[in-house]
Image 1 (cartoon, rainbow, N blue to C red):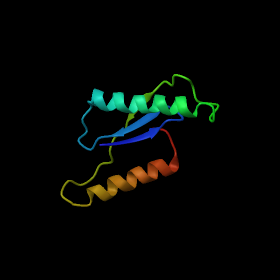
Image 2: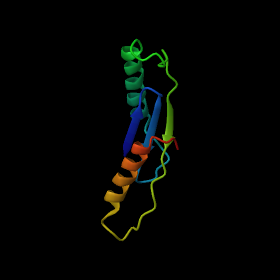
Image 3: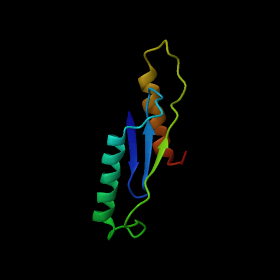
Amino acid sequence: MLAAISPWNGIVFWLDPSMDDFISEFVQRIINEGIIKFSILHRKDIKKMKKNPEIRWKKIQRPLQNQDTKDCGYFVCRYIMETIASRRPF
């Protein structure tokens, strides 16, 4: 599992290679608390940040890949890198 967190926007991008639709409540609670603490600490520095940010979770669909090869990890990492580099929403 991979969580790409954007605390300035209150968005968490979630990638689960098992394609499980369930995100653990523990994981959500920990990440949400971290975003809230970040916004409290940096609210003075970043004018756009809200006092109580609305935290949105977006599940990323993994790219299709051949199950018979051992290159799958490379392609997932490359997909994540390209997605983050392009800074486009899903």
